[in-house]
Image (cartoon, rainbow, N blue to C red; front, side):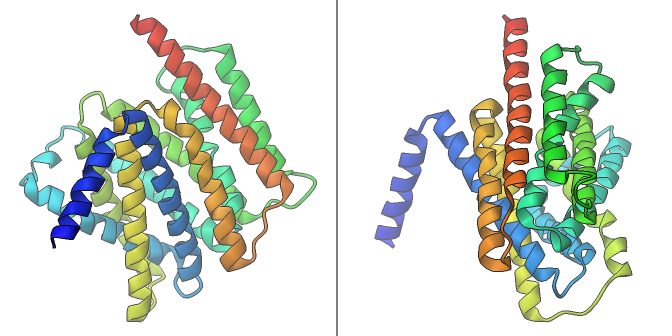
Length: 305
């Protein structure tokens, strides 16, 4: 027991002695690995269960991890004047999740991850159209570059575009809409309240699609579903804490690790080898998103000064 306490204290001291940037980077790396594991598990379990049913259990187990936080606050974190906006975001989020989980079941993991990098590109477009953010030439240049990367992966007219790729791209666009809503809500709502309602509405809205395709399963499959919920929760908590530790532009480059992890999992467990166009397109998309984030940070810093 003493040795365990010593190890725990030593680890805690080591962690506290790290700079916020290093802690943020470490947490971002952890989130990419956890997301990749979840994606691989979804692909694996989809061989016996429909993706809609998997999504339901992902949300239920995620809600179970959220329950202690709700009880500890005596449900005070649920106080809000934006219940309709929370519900709307829940509908958008569950639509995006169902599309994404379906894509995971039918499309190579690396290709899905590469296309999911388009979410910040879609968000940059919506920030101008919906939030009325300032039009900047560099932003539109990066957006066009990001969509060029998407075309490199999809190669329309040269190869047939598979359903999974379309679902992933649509999912990324919906995630961007959800992020715009979060940006609006964050003006008056706490991050804890936003996360809590996301968990609640995702659990509720994923029930009906799951019932529609419900099929019985054994205790072993339940264990895999719990692991999907756990890895997803770890990923969400790690990335949220990472954003608290340091500026997103310091950690965003490490989000590219997600593609490396999923490529390794896909190759090792599912014999999926991503082609050169997936790597090139993913790099173009990712660098475009990172460039937008970097320039927006500099622009906001100059305004605050």
